[in-house]
Image (cartoon, rainbow, N blue to C red; front, side, top):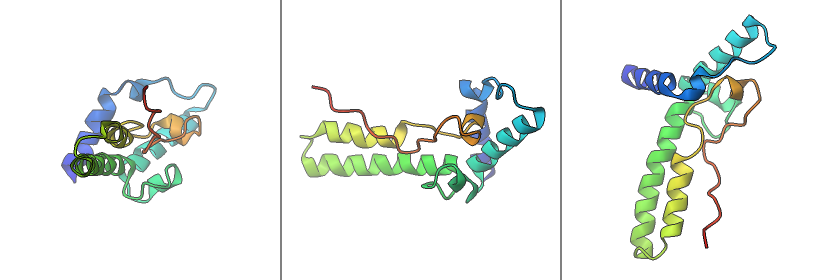
Length: 125
């Protein structure tokens, strides 16, 4: 569990939006509250459901589970289709790996909507 939290902290520290400007025109207390709520929603079970109702076990773990499940489901889809429907496989993987991997203060302040399972783009062609 400690490794998961440490890994999540490293990902957040390396990501550009973690260094984004704090909410403009908000007091220091509001900035601390939004930042603290984002950290709590990322790692604590149940808190993330306030911002992303599909994510009960904490947002980062939830997104990792969605990504892992998409790999398994995409593999099954390739086997069942015989490799003939790669657009569907890409769409399954897109839903698992695209979107927000963690919540920021923008999500907790209501400026952005979390997207743990974004809709795939329309097929090319």
